[in-house]
Amino acid sequence: MSRLRLLHAVQRRPGRLLKDLAADAGIHINTAREHMRVLEDEGLVASAPVETGRRGRPPVVFSPVVDAESSAEAGRRVKDAVARGELLRRVQPDLRGSLAAETLHQLDTLFEHLDDVGLEPEIDQDALAVGLRPCRYEPLIEEERPVVCAVHAKLVRDQLQQIDGPLELRRLHPYVGPERCEIVLGVAGESARSVRDGGVDADADDGELAARADAAMREWERKSSRVLLNGPEGAREA
Image (cartoon, rainbow, N blue to C red; front, side):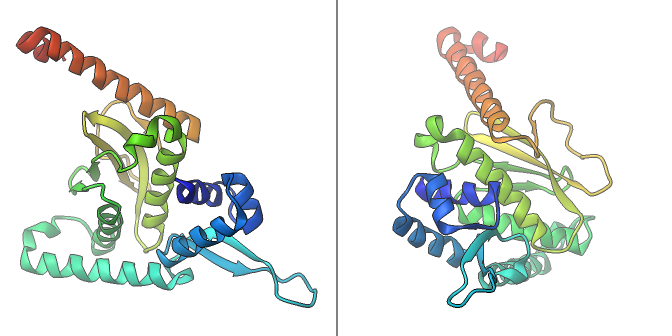
């Protein structure tokens, strides 16, 4: 959770010093240093020195990786994801569909990221929608929901920007099922293909993301209770 808070702090205000990020996340600077090293090794954060004109080692600031060229690990992951996607489509040509190559490559990169973090992505290429299982931090999510939801949303947006292509994040639909969330993508300049009602805009602030996720979760709990209490009739109503 400390690592998530640090990543959240970097996403909210890029280009800050380690001591400021540690204070924002509420952890000791030495602990923060180790976590930031892991985030850099994973290709999620990049560090850069800041010239001050003074003698000595320049201070280092941290920013999210939105350009794969700023992180060797992010660049490797993008290259590997595209290669695996192309190999899969050569084996199963029907998976190519009608999407342009650059769009497919963005989906390849996004799929690899979501799969790596255990969200079990299911991509609908026609609707440009991605089904996900709720994240592995679910036991902590009641207290930390604003951080968890905001970090995941921004990571999806950053992943799409790491490779040239027209796809962008449009909306998020938490808990469209008892164990399923959905994100809706779109092609720049075009309307979203998915017509699911509700959800929250991809540019919503942390509080709105958290409130929408809480409301969706409570709704599913209410429906589940109705099924348990009323049997088949309750299931039809739900």
